[in-house]
Length: 108
Image 1 (cartoon, rainbow, N blue to C red):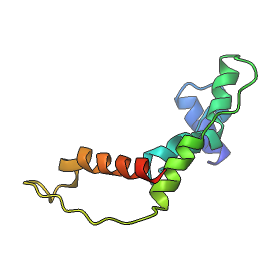
Image 2 (cartoon, one colour):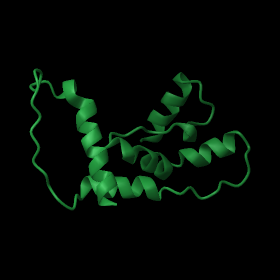
Image 3 (cartoon, rainbow, N blue to C red):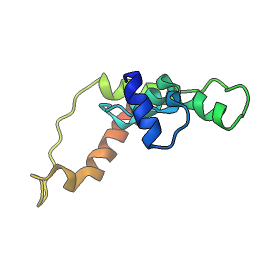
Image 4 (tube, helix red, strand yellow):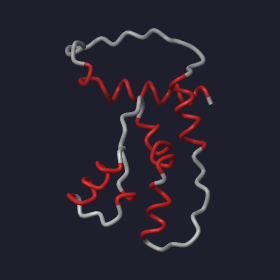
């Protein structure tokens, strides 16, 4: 983000230091969010703010593995879902997420 925008956001959000404003970008999967926030340095900002000392290196390998499995699947499976509200993708969101998690578990 531009420095002017950071200053404006920090002013209106009552954040004293503009560098503490962290951008929340869109990701293709929710499992990329911890990786994106780490890249943005939010973990370092939290440690600095609370004066927690030296920040330990986070183990982000589980998130990285899950993102790899989602973005580069080893196999493809065609599955039919039969139901009353199949035209609404959110109606069976929990089922679709369960199948995604099953695929991640099987691949690694």
